[in-house]
Length: 285
Length: 206
Image 1 (cartoon, rainbow over the protein chains, first blue to last red):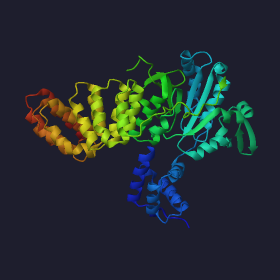
Image 2: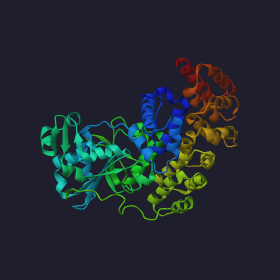
Image 3: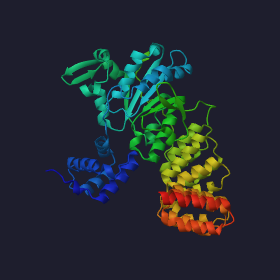
Image 4: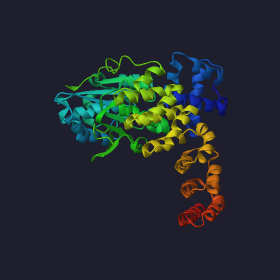
């Protein structure tokens, strides 16, 4: 039986959105009502609850957090593709890494964090860029960490199977080198790349999660903060600041601006992209 | 070398002895390391009873990152105690502290609202100016009545000037009469005359 959208009342929606915001930092304005209602009703049905009220009570008092995770997975949007906003990857290999390396010993470790991971297109794009377009790759140990609040997409990222649409921006030689065709519209990324990326669940609004990320040299956090409200953006910006090494860089999506979120970072303009930088020690504002 | 699988971030990089209560985090707020103090400040956002400690620490803290963490945690708490902890900063000589307090207070209308009338009658005109600045940030249904009260009654020209500046942004043509009255009240002050005329012109053009 198909459940009616009207089963979620205005009061239910308000109550749910405040709860979800407190837990995740994600805020749904009224224009997202249809999107939220549809997914909420799917979860009400999937959990065998009679109505939103009984579902919400169960959700709030569930100790394991398992249903909250299901809900997060349902509410997050995960559409991306390889080499998206590639000008920032150009900036990485042409400028940012050169600066980072100046502060490293030969053979030292460089740590890159891609959040949100989504289904893996971004961290794997970073890996391919490094292998193909950064001449210093063999002189350093590069670690790629990738995180998402949605555990379903993390599993998909570790499977590494992509559609034609996902890989359409990839140069043909990279496709041949790093992917195996599974079917007409399916390509699997190489095991070496899957094994090179460390995927973990992380909620940027939760200090218990973000405290595990330290000594990061470069963060890609693109098109995530647009889903947050002002306060959650600040919390996220501060968590990423703590995760970065002094002098570390952060790349946001093209419509996002750190200057409007936090004054902690310096703006850096490189030929390929404008990025944000944690000040070096002694170089604080 | 080249790409290397990261060691799991929770294996060895996590500090092993993080507190699980407010008192423990309060102690870490005194740590020598700004990174530890910032972490403590962020963690204390989950304990409402920490508001007083967070606010008091703002007066002594010099590291900008830690300050921002303190403000952010008080903003997350957003209750009566958080507002009470931030209000003394309106008297600070340091603009960054004052501005941080105004920004934080501006996001907690329910906690701040009941205190606005008292603040608008503070004996220190600077505090009244910063309160008017705060009204510019506050999403509260009484903001316009409060501003109109300042226009009609505050004796200090600089406080009234600040109120005119906020009213330009949030007022409507029907508030022109209050501006004309303020202009009349400070008839000898050319700046108030200029500011009122400009405000009326902008409101009527909008």
